[in-house]
Length: 241
Length: 235
Ligand SMILES: Nc1ncnc2c1ncn2[C@@H]1O[C@H](COP(=O)(O)OP(=O)(O)O)[C@@H](O)[C@H]1O
Ligand SMILES: [Mg+2]
Image 1 (spheres, each protein chain N blue to C red):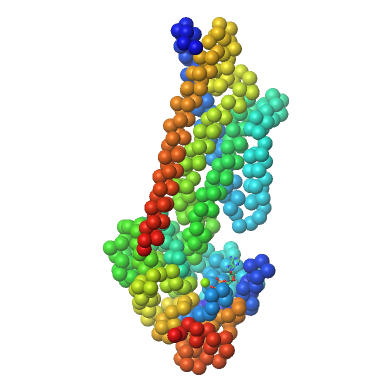
Image 2 (cartoon, each protein chain N blue to C red; image 1 turned 90 degrees about the horizontal axis):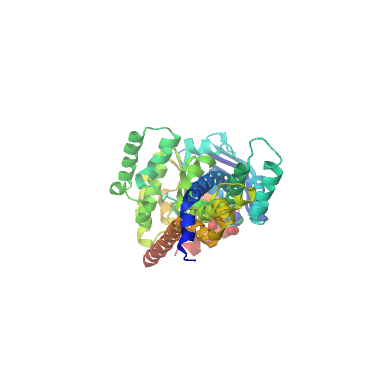
């Protein structure tokens, strides 16, 4: 479903990814963890080419990613949820959800709106369809952003620290939506997060990234009971109190 | 200054001032159209991800902003209009000069507007599968309008005032040229002071409401930013 082959990424002289290989299978839920600045965002952003790798290959559904194919591949295969929500502030919630289906998938507006209302209901925010996103709380905005990602009806969803910008009391409402999504067998989810409870509950596989490399990967049981790598142990002991 | 007969001379020549005003407004609108097209094209180029368009845009902007408009207009008048290139009358050259000059400033306004939109906005669009052009026109540019409008209106005010460079073309029909023709004309020169005052008043009446509108707008935006920051802080 998603395959990264020897992906390197440098920003100027700074080498952030140092040859990452990763294969995410269809329907798999992968959680990426690691210290801040270790390259997690860069890694997940290479998957939909928000960052173009300096070298190496990215395949989505056997399509080789490239700068010129990014729009096409992202349109039909993947969506992303960001730390800062990135809802479009000049549009109502409903327009945020229907813009891409109408403009990119040529779905009739009425039909797109019906679909969108369905997803708004699913994240519990039906009544916010006609307000502007900036009037909503962070937790609500992020649930809308998840609904927006779903309206494209793509099989892959990337999450880059979706709860890190939220006030603590709003984290759970977003995690609940994500946990509910994870029950869908055919959704492939790649999630960068520091929420270890979520990783434990949802992940098929946990990937530990440090210094631009994948240092260790395995099931949550393996990770949280019997980590092998010293750096993994040090990281987990710091983050789990 | 208050002699009635001098003001009467002005009044008797009012048609000349009216005609001048009309042609100045027409020139300003034509110049603005060119300036907007150039400004948007070069503004977009200046935020491009690849280097050559950025450099070309930079050269245009710096060159135009760091040489006098007067020189640019003279260049066009004497190297193009008066050397008999077909169709390029002094009037058209003046309009083109205004368009090129203000296009450089509008390009900077557009660039500032685009860079004021957080990067996350275009990233969200790219992640949904929008192309760069779709992202620019559907997501980024609509969000720049409120930032762009006040400085844009200021550019329009400057552009109207800068129609005065048409005076160089000689025999032109814009407000400045008409005013000056009146002031040095046979039988009207005695009312030169009054003529210039009227010319100035007309410019003021056109420009003042525009610049007032622009600064009101700007203040409202600033106040709104302050109050929304307060709200953020209170959360
Ligand atoms: N666009 C960029 N330009 C320059 N450096 C960057 C850029 N994006 C990320 N970096 C650097 O790359 C490193 C890894 O960043 P990131 O992938 O965001 O880490 P993480 O998400 O794990 O915190 C950091 O040192 C960061 O400063
Ligand atoms: Mg990050």
